[in-house]
Length: 429
Image 1 (cartoon, helix red, strand yellow):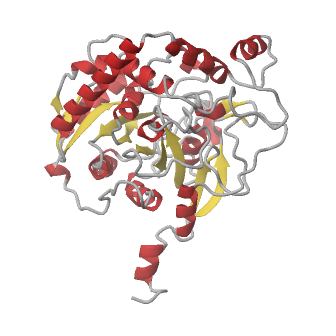
Image 2 (cartoon, one colour):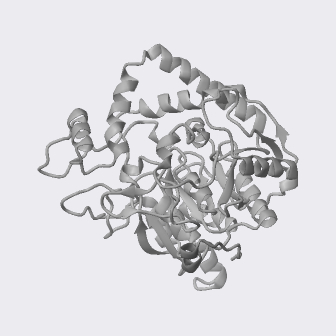
Image 3 (cartoon, rainbow, N blue to C red):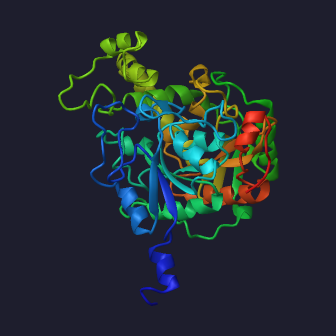
């Protein structure tokens, strides 16, 4: 096989000439890398994140870095540097966050492949709200280095990962293969998979907790339709009712996470929680609300007895075991991504418990793919999560491709004229 043969190029540079966009929190040499934080001097990346290096070696061409909320701390995308990102399907609505910039680009047809990140659904919620495909890989399968925020907490990579996002499901395995860390867990992404050989399980609620909102009527019908189409077995994993408690306990007790109270611009005094809170409510802070209150949440977790955290940690381990035994190496779990389709800007502040539908799988360390399953009555995209055991990413990705085949996948958003006239379009790409 010659070095310049088609076969060689396909193996060594599978992304040759393909444009790729990157979430601004991921370092791209020569581009801004401040994750939506206000600095007097723009923070320019001096080197590429390892995953960006891999994309470039694979032939991909980095076009730009895209918008993110400050330090990726919100399921909505706005900051005080580059402003607000809007949903291509309805400009009055959010594309979600924190990877909303990437999602809006892919959904609007401005990009095909995107690099995002995920610690609590930050890739999956924007994918759902924007009608595209987002995958949270098995922990450590993709290098998390070169990202803001970061942490030197030993188990940071158990929860956080850089993640692929694509307009088409069939491109997810290709992009993930190019992103995979050579020193991380080996994923069998080229393994041929028959969906007929996969066992399906599903839930359409968070168990008996009653903490999170139930699904909208359209989403409930769509998810149950998908479950029927794939002959999924309804299960009742009762420990899922602990999703909120165990996720907050696990994530907010991690030490040395980069916040506005840690890294400051050279010559600037470190910020304090109380002072920054007062500044925010008087309109004098450079930060958005989630960045300010994150310090309060961390302090609150410190007053919870260690015995409580240990109890919640034991529930995490029990849930991991339950999923491992249920799914094995040939099963997937269908679960809501979010209880409603894209809402209007800032309404996430009324729905801060609902992201636990997604964050639970960061807590459990399971790979999961958001899949586009159609439009609701407002012509807004609907999505569902497909979850597998660690190392079994190929299963959820195979199901994503089948869902794209069955339900049509990405739908072209309304034109600008349709937005202004209140019309909509169902034209498929």
